[in-house]
Image (cartoon, rainbow over all chains, first blue to last red):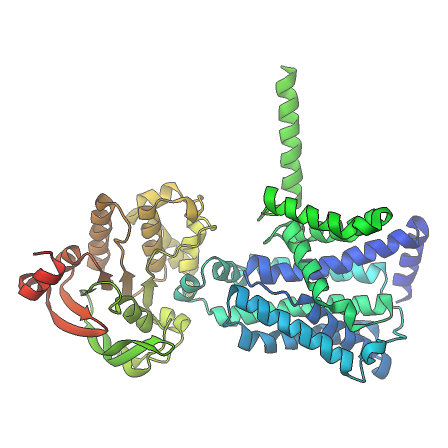
Length: 305
Length: 234
C-alpha cells in the first residue's frame, strides 16, 4: 500500500515523528478502549483481561507475518480472529460468573496468556519477539479506528445492543424478556476480543518488538481506566479517555517521578467528582459540546442584561 | 394449559421444591399462596426456565418445557414478572416496554400492543421518556406487568405484585390483573397477601415448605379453617 505510506510520510513531515507516534498510539488505544467499553460499559461485564486479547492478536498477527509472509491486512485479520476465538472460548465457562468473580477469572486468564507467551518458544519467550516489519502507519490506524467505531456503533444501536444493555441493567429480567443472555454475553466477548486483537496486531507492526510484559495486568488496568475516565457506555467517551490517558503521561514526562502519583490522583478525583466519566452515558460528542456552549452563551446573556 | 408433574428443584445442593404438582387451565387466574420461603418464587422460576427442575416434568400446551431455555419459553407464550419488579432502571419507560417485545418480530402488532399497554396504564403514558428507576414503586410494578404483556403471553406469571406497595396501589394492580385476565390471558399469581389473592383468583394452591398442601377453588379455600387460621389472620 504505497499510497498509505506516502500519506503517512507526508503527514509525519508536517507534524514531526514524535507527534505522529502519539497519534498512532491514541488510535490503537481508542480501539482497545472502545472494544472494552462494549464489554464493560454496555454489557456490564467487568473484564480486566483485555490486554490478554490484545496480546493474542499481536503475537498471532506478528507470527503469520514473520513465518508465513501474510500481507498486512490478512495478518491483522488473523490476529483479530484468533483473539475472538479465545474470547468465545473464555466466554463460555466464565460467563456464568458475575461481577467480582468474572473480574478475577478474566484476571487469571490474562496472567495465563502472559505466562504462556513468556514460556513458548515460538513467541520468543523472555527474549521477546523481534524483527516484526513496520507496517502500521497513520492511514492503517485511522481506517482501523473508523472500522471499529463504525461496527461497534452499529451493534450498539441494533437489537443486539438493546439486549446487551438489558443484560447490564438486570440479567434476570433480561432472561425473562426472552433475551438469551448467555449467547449475547459470549457474542459481546467475542466481538470485544476481535477488536482487541486488531489493536494488538497494529501495535505489533508498529513497535516491531513484542514482549509478554507489554501486555501485563497494568495494561488491562490502563485500558479499564480509559473506559471509566471517558464514560462507561459511551463510545465517544472511550475515545476521549484513550486520548487523555495516552497524551497525559507524555505531557507529564518532565515530572516523571510523580507521573503515576498524578495519574492516580486524577482517577480518584474523577471517581469522587464525576463517576459517570467525562462524557457520561449516552451523550454524543457534538451535543455535549453544543450544550456546553449554549450554557456559556446563556450565562453571558444573563450577565449582560 | 400448564401442568407441573412431580417437580423438584432448588439451588445448588439445597432443595426447595419437593415433588410438587400443579396445573393451570386456559382462562383461569390461579393463585399460589404461602408464607415466606416456602418455594413460591422458586416454582415460578422453574416454570419460566430461569431454574431447571431436578426431576419431574413441566408441560405447557402439551409440550414438555422442563429443559427449554428461558428465551424459548418466552417465545412459546409464558411471560414472567419477577419479584421486586426488576425493571431496567436506567432505561426509559418506552425502552423497557420495547424490550418486553424482544422475542417478537411483528412490528405493527407490537405497536398495537404498546398502545394497549399505554391505555391500560395511563400513568406510564405520562412518563414514557422518563427512566424507569425514577418511577414510584407502584409505577414500576405497572411497568413490569406492562413489559410482560408486550410479549403477548398466553400465560402470565406474576410474582408478588403487591410487594412493597401502598394499599391503594395494591387494589389498583389487582383490578388490572382482573382486567388482563378478562381479555384472555391466563394468570398464575404468587402472593403473600392471601386475602386479596384468594378474592381475585378462581383456584388456589397453598404451599408449605416446598410442598403443595392444599388445592381447591378459592371459595372453598376462603372457608377452609386451616387457611383462615394460617393466612387470613383468624
